[in-house]
Amino acid sequence: MEAFVGLLVVLAFVGLVTRRVGLPYVVALVIFGVAISTVSPPLRVELSPQLVLLVLLPGLVFEAAYSLDQDHLLQALGGVLLLAVPGVLVVAGFVALVLHLATGLSLGSGFVVGAMVSATDPASVTSSLRRLHAPVRLGTLVEGESLLNDGTGIVAFTIAVAAVSGHVGAGQAAVEFVGISVGSVVIGIASGVVISRFAALTDDHLVELTLTLLAAYGTYLVADRLGMSGIIATVVAGVVLGTYGRRVGLSARVQEAIEDVWEFLAFLLTALVFLLIGLAIPLSRLADVLAPIAWGVLAILAARAAVVYLMLGGASSLAERLVGRERLPLAWLHVMFWAGLRGAVAVALALALPAGFPDRAELQGITFGIVLFTLLVQAPSAERVVRWSGARTTRGPGHEPSTTGRTPSPGPSRD
Image 1 (cartoon, rainbow, N blue to C red):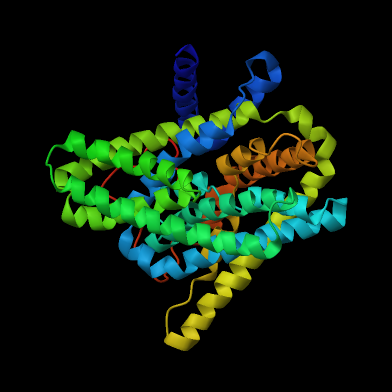
Image 2: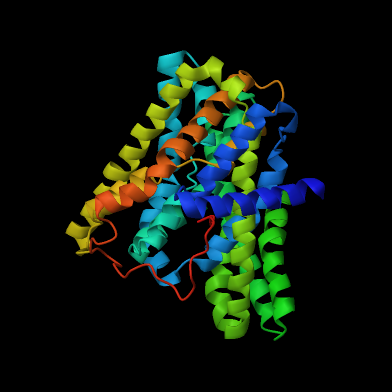
């Protein structure tokens, strides 16, 4: 309890300071955590992967999935799926190839690193989009990708670790990837529908809020116990509850209560995640792998550019020619490219590498270094990139300003 209260003090203090200096909240938390762990090594917090994957992440992805604008999600679904499935695999494969050629790391170990850093966590970018009233569909693309690619990246990581350990072959790995993904979606849909029907049986907002907690954490646990992806299942359950549940069982008063409560929970969980990331990353371990980190950073930037400009941009242009659908503006692609930050999932997966895994310390160091680069270099410049690109004024598909009835919170949201 003392540690928890101490963390709350830090979150409040950093929030007040960042309001005055204009630094993104999540970036300030990471910097504060790194500084504390460096100056006072005895205060270092050992961030367990179970804490992130089982306690913090399900609540974060559920809130974001529930809050997504459903109409714009349907319009952007093709692009979101392109980024979150083949896009993740392209990034993982390219990182593996670059690390193998530049540093001599095996392709298998390189793919493990690629899988760990393949999922995006663009909290500061989405907060900038909201603050600058950028188009809703652009925000939905960024948010939707970050939700779905968490699950894809975790599944790819799990299978890659098993493959390097010699437990599965390439063909079996591909079959498992598809099977886990499909099974997780089915579990998420079933959970969302069942909980929506239960919510329709009561008008007690406290009971319905409890059901949303069950949707977030119960869905994750069921999917995990069945060998599926808890994150994918939780995301799908959140989307179903935010669409089907709103229609069949959630009154306007309850919906407002859910949004307010989950907005606070998401703020608290996200703040804790990024502060704990800063406390958990040992700077001393990064000095020995500076060269691989540099190659890894170049690899993710190049892979991200290929995924956004070639895959997403190319698919958008093709859709315009074939079905007359308005293509994504180039300004939006610039923002999507810079939104490829890495965060909690990458750190949790690095910590989850089994003891005795080949080159474990080196792989962890490379992953930590890449995460720090994206958080300390890309994140602080996110708002500048949104302004420079003209994305907030560029008219495109779904170009309505991203405004809601609520005032954005001062802190982060896991979007």
